[in-house]
Image (cartoon, rainbow, N blue to C red; front, side):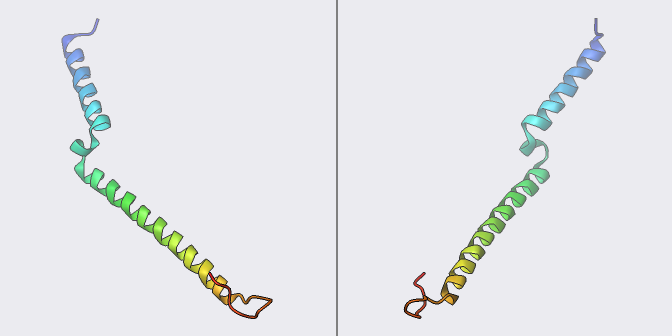
Length: 75
């Protein structure tokens, strides 16, 4: 059987683990803030990449000439 001290120690360890796993925003607000910044910056990068590809497709479409009329394609 576990002694009283071991039980108290294990209870404290479980409580600390629960705090770390279940409540990271309370336990480590700096890390949570950094995680939020990273997620926002990744979202911004994704949007910029999508816009760049759209702009690139539009530019390629503008450069192509219509073979029949010799006019630019409407994009």
